[in-house]
Amino acid sequence: MKLTRENFLPWLGLAARLALGGVLVVAGAIKIPYPYKAAAAMRAYELLPNSFASFFGYILPWFEVGLGLLLILGVATRISGLIGALLMLLFIGAISSAWARGLTIDCGCFGGGGQVAAGETKYLQEIIRDIALAVAGFYLYFRPDSHFALDNRGK
Amino acid sequence: MASKNRGPQRGGRNNEPDPVTRWIVIGMVSLVVIIGAVFTVVSNKSASNVALPPGASKEDGYGIVFNGDKKPQIDIWEDFQCPSCKRFEDANGAKILSLAKEGKAKVVFHTLSFLGDESVVAGMGGGCAAEQGKFLEYKSFMYANQQEEHSGTWTKPYVISMAASAGLDETKFAACLNKDKYRKWLTNVAAAGSDANINGTPTVVIDGNVIESDQQGINYYTADGFNAQLAKYGIK
Image (cartoon, rainbow over all chains, first blue to last red; front, top):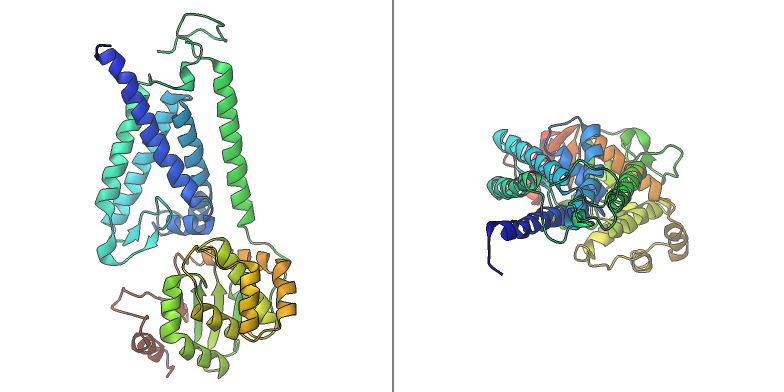
């Protein structure tokens, strides 16, 4: 089969789905057994009042796993991609803000989180990773066609 | 691209996705997410009317209090499974033990369970040890014999045998731990920690001031560093 733009893009879509969805499922699943820690990681950003931050820390991992599953299965790919991309923008904003305010925290993206020593922050890497994932999400919003997606059933 | 047609198109050759399968999957995933999220929020909420170990005080975030009428007040938020807490204990455990036992300060121990199930078992054991008036002995023994994080070693039978080695009444301790008597107390301690914005262990607070290691030029992982902080509050 000759490689053309038309038969290549669905593979790119599949890669975007698996990358964004896979990272979300893993990140969420790691945090689910340790809700107290996830809540503490959220509070460490000092962006929300304590009780709100804890609340979001408890529910975010479940949300990540759910969204990740939809992406991996390829269900409602367009809207899942958009939500995933917006979530990444939110993370990028939170991490940038922590960086700008001179906090020294771990993003807590994959468990962990909270205070770290001044030399141990990884803000730049965390932001670059989230930008890449946001790009994957926006790509799916504009070009949701992909291979092996439940969305394709009945086509 | 999605067309505007509605309803399933059986055997159709158009590009309409199958909305039934799609909504079933969306529904199932949403259900799991909602149930999981609600369960997590509810099970981490503080509850009233929970069994408190002797010495635990609601006013002090459900921590176990020694010398309630003394000053200054030292709050220690810790997790028996946390390696940094062991470092802190190795450097300052004896000092804190003497402060608590000799009545030189009000000392409040907050047993957090950041690190999951093994921390919960160890923490519940703290409550059971307090029943026998041996919280401090139990705590020291747990740190002295700390295992690698998440190694799976701290099961109930193992912790019961540790308590016995630390000189506690094994039968009483086992009865207490096996029925999860203090599980809800631990949840309340954790919820109080959230309210107090305790985001890591160990966190040491003296008279309401958080002493942060590696910041403010403090290193409380050495006896000298910690004693210097205590000295600021008149503790020798």
